[in-house]
Image 1: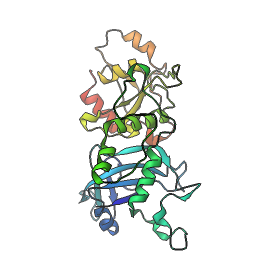
Image 2: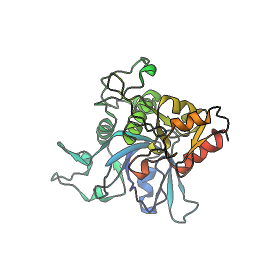
Image 3: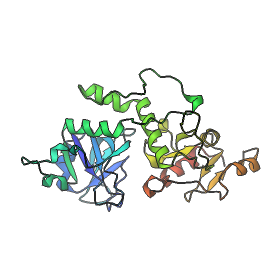
Image 4: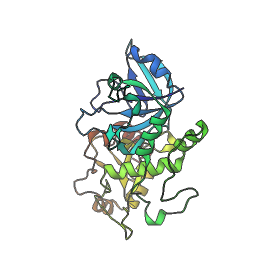
Length: 299
């Protein structure tokens, strides 16, 4: 087992779905196989407009031949392991290149930086993960939901890996993952409710909006922004209970079981469509919306 870097472009020609699979040609097979059972970091090249740099992490579960593309392979991502970084990490910062393993003996960037799949040292992985998950400006839950939790503090403990067990425990912690998911979703939506357009800030300067999973975690929904919505309390309650949903073109659907149809129409956006993030890849994915309509929405 070993850490790795998988390069993924938002305009990729490969059949990638970062939270589920990574498609690659045979020349990278051994490198990908070396990552089975361990964590990888996704990286978007600097030449991409609005690049996210190192933008997420996930755990590789297995590698299989691609049944739909002869000669290609798929790295299957362990369900529930994918996590967008709260803070996308740039290729370099004031201290130089973040991924130190890319430097040659002269301290210059080597040709390894062009590899779509490459090994990543434990120290580089720890550095990138620490930068991606740190909480310089925590986005706290809504006031009514702010229940103290053991081990959850304003000041984050440094991201260190003394033992494999500690690493897996930290990255798998539901408290940690919910906290990071909230930050990434609220940032994408500008802390504004997708259904109502409201952007309410409480007396403590925190957003009164939730980060909702479209396909719930307990139903194998991943912690990826495209499986999330920023929702105010009432809209979140209605969405989870299937009283409202979204079509693939993001039209807000209202269940016939809602007893106050006119009241709900007054509450939602006047144009009847959800507000979405600026970046296309962060918008609700049709795959997750279809799941919500099939399994939650009350027709």
